[in-house]
Length: 239
Image (cartoon, rainbow, N blue to C red):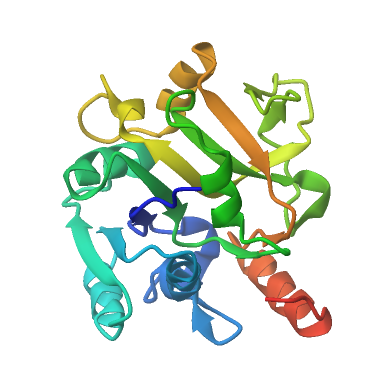
C-alpha cells in the first residue's frame, strides 16, 4: 500500500445551508466534539502518514489561516482564491502544490473509522494505472443525518454509476477521495464542479467507489450538526 504524500482539504466554501452559524465562523471551523471540523480532517491525514496538506481558501480564508497557524504537526500550504472556484476549479488551481496522486477531502466532513482507517483502505484499493479517482461512499442507510436520494450505484468491481433521476441510490459520496492528477487533463478554466470530471471518468470506466465501513455524519445543516453531536455523546464508538 502506498499512501499519497499530499492532500488537499477543500475549505473555500460559504456553507450557506448552515444559516447564521457561518455568518462569522467559516464552516470548517465549526466545532464537533470540541474540535474544529478541519482539525479532525488533518488529524486523520496525519494518522495515516500524510505530512503535507494544501488548504484552499476563499470565504473567511484569513480566519481559517490564522486558526491553522497553531498547528505544527503537518506542513500546510494555502491556495487562496480571489473568487470561489468550486470543487473542481479549486483543486485544479492547487495542482502545482500536489503530487501525482493525492487525497482530496472536504473540510466539513466528519467520519469515524472502523478497524482500518478509511484513508488506508482508499490507498490500498487505489490503482493509479486503472483509476482516475476512487471515491469513499457511505451507505445511505447508515449516513447519520442524511435524508437525500443518494448519489451513486456501484457494481461488484466498484465501478461507479450515477443514479437516474427516478432512482434511489444506496450510496452517497462521503466527501473523501483519492485522485490522480490526470483526472484534470483538459479541465476547464475558472470555477467548475468536480462532478464534470467524474462524469468523464465514468464514461471511461475510470471512476470507482469504495464503501466506508465506519460511521459518517452529514453535518451540512444545523440540524445535522446537532444530530451528530447527540449521537457522538450517546454512542460509544471507537475513534
